Every structure is written in C-alpha cells, then in structure tokens.
Image (cartoon, rainbow, N blue to C red; front, side, top):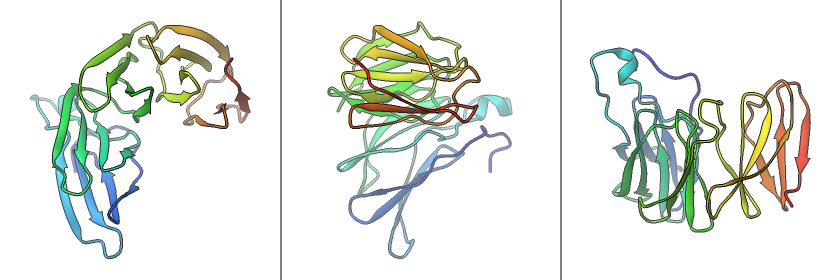
Length: 206
C-alpha cells in the first residue's frame, strides 16, 4: 500500500472472456477470472516517480471503461491507456493525470484531468481532437455523453454542456447550489444529476 493515496476507489467491472477488472492505488490494473478468482494478468498504468510521497501518488480512481476487447483506464499523475482485456497488452497510451472515469462518443474518448481541463482524443489512438480549459480549477466531474454533447458538473453545482465535435461550451444550468459530487447518468436522451442537497434532476439537452 502506498504511503499516500487519493480519497476514493475504482469499482471493478466485468469484461468479455469471463474476466473481472479492477484498478488499484498503486497504479496497477488487474484482471482475474470471474468464476474462480485466478489471477489472469496485471499491468502498470502508472509508475511512481519523485522524491516525496505526494509526488508518488498514482491512484486509479476513475471508472474503468470496457469497450469490446479493450479496457481504458486513467491514473492520477500517470497515463491514459487502452489495454487488451484478454492479455493485458498495452494497445496505446498517453501521459495524463486524472482521477475520473473516461467517456466515449462520436469516435472520441473524453477525460477530465486533475486541473479540470477536458480533453477529447481520437478512439484507437492518442491523437488529441480538442481541449477545453474554460472550467480549469472548478473541480470538474467525470464527463458524461448525452445526445450530441458531453456534460460535466462543477463545485458550484452547474451542469455544463460541451459540443462533442469541437469542445465548445454550448449551455449550462445550475442543478444544485450545494454542488454535485455524485456521478451523472444518462439514458433515453436525458441527463440525471443528483445534487449534494439530495435533489435529483433530469435534463433534456436541446
């Protein structure tokens, strides 16, 4: 166990081939067989660097994204990586620092880094499509795709909508003046937001 870790943890996910995948605070992604727990593979998403404990924090806290035969994971002070579910082989990776999950849409992958910069990279590669730093240092949430947009929340409880095409902010509304910490979900063209005050809201982007 590292000397320091972030508050939070990544939830295990099921993947094809009868495997369960989980990310840990030491920057390792692990796959085990779902039926008997036998270790299948492990791979480093990040390697600790630096002299001080704070510099060596490399937690995988964001929700893993399973996409067919690939799993995508991001780590704090580490990397964004796509790995083969069955073998753990690294398909591609790029340097990134994020404690949020990854979202997919319009042929892109979306993530929010530790400063609140929202980035879209082309799926199946590490080519950057766009970046948006308008919400930097606003404690931006994990991104959620809904319709033609990417939604994020901030510490003041605002929901911001960004175009999936070019990353422009095209709309915002306040969901809860007490802020939003819970992960958003989407379905049926609606975005569901649960605020810190206990208020549940459903929004339909136009």
